[in-house]
Length: 335
Image (cartoon, rainbow, N blue to C red; front, side, top):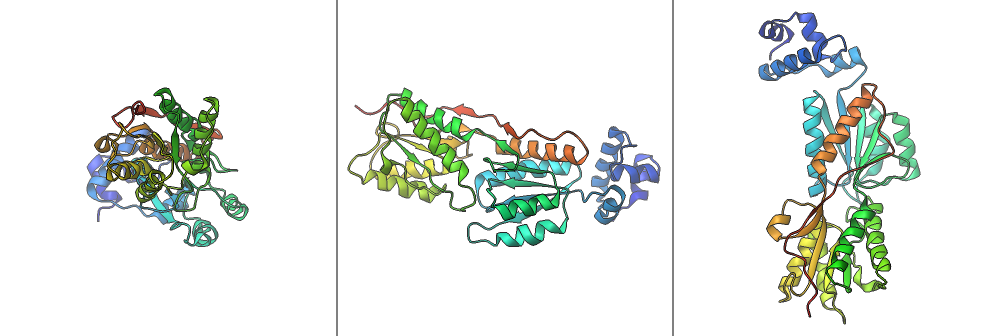
């Protein structure tokens, strides 16, 4: 394994300069720091996190808390966070709550409080009073991605506004019989995002003078299977909608498969619109309102690293951009 001496020889710098650069001390020029890190990577040098922590008071590690680890949105956010941390010479520690049946106490009362990290990113989580107290005790810079969390800053899309836009798009196409597949996410970790998206749907209908049908808001659990089963139930009802706004692309995919299984066509018989910008959206031809979770993760990492270094804190809420992507899954209602 290469050491500081080998890096010094390869870069033509002194050992003391290389040591200061690896510890990210302010007395070293940024260009020198980048050159040293680049050579350290090439030579396979692994710095001692314990030594760096003693020198700078930092662990050079950021923690990320996720409800579950098998969702497209969480995976893409993690990609953005990890890429930004690696560029800055930081590591990532993942705390997995393992869904509704997981041991949240393990994370909030033991793991996080061991002070192994410099900051925390929390994905699509709502916290009870005890958990918020534990987070405050850590005194870490904190940021939530993916929906509001009372008492904690967050970065993400305006879920209510995007849901309103999605529903209004269908209304503008001429639909008046619009269902909404949403409901509480399967992991049971965040009720606010599903709630905001449902309220956006209801407000768009209200502004159009349309009364919602209670049976047309089934719980799709934010999964492909949940979207499929919810759509299958809607098709068995006494009255069938001509359009569906799904609160996630994964549920929209499931709904489209259920429609096709029933011998109906998308969009000739039933239009479908989603939210998220899932990678499979192009394959399905899904019209959606796309967000960029990789960019959100990278932005969160940059903000927190800046705060660790003493830069001003992020405002209470920073909205992330949304891009309307029109494909072939939505059209005018059937005659």
